[in-house]
Image 1 (tube, helix red, strand yellow):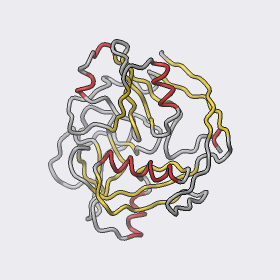
Image 2: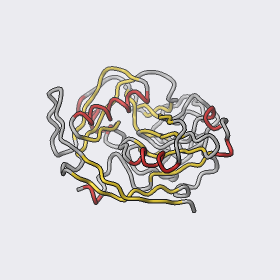
Image 3: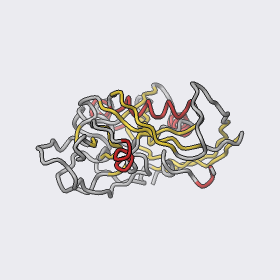
Length: 256
């Protein structure tokens, strides 16, 4: 098992801008303008950051929230199967992206009765109250963000653990570009520095490092398999590392 850990200190300062006054409680916010899948994720995180919060696209809490605000358009749902190559109609592969990822999830029982592609690995909540599978490359939709506080003390020290075997995958890449995750690319970087940059980025969920060409890829906002075009560049050198204890929705015990 390839696992490594280290401790680091992270300085955090309070920051209130644009008139937003975040409270100590989690809060939800509907964004009616329409963005692509990754742009919606990025927007939630960026807005949270302006108020020293962690912002993320809502998954598990979406249904009740939408019923309260009576929104009548389809919205992105943070429910995905991005850790799987393909997903059949009855596969229990769907997980809420804001939580710590696992391979064992749930099936999509409340889906619309339409033909879907098995490579459609993200989801929408439609205006007629159904979950519909789609791909990350198709369409722009409204979305709901949730914001939760991070520690407001001046210094935070925590142990960071990356594990290459915490989730056992048959393959670490997908075959279709239509439904891939959200990635950040860093070139000519060591494994240690690749992992450090992931650990100080609250949006980083896992990382891939190539020992041949020193390429680094961070999976942002939700954990996901590599894109095929990236895998094909020196495929024998890639290794995946999961950020074992990190979730956007869950406040770690040493952060409260």
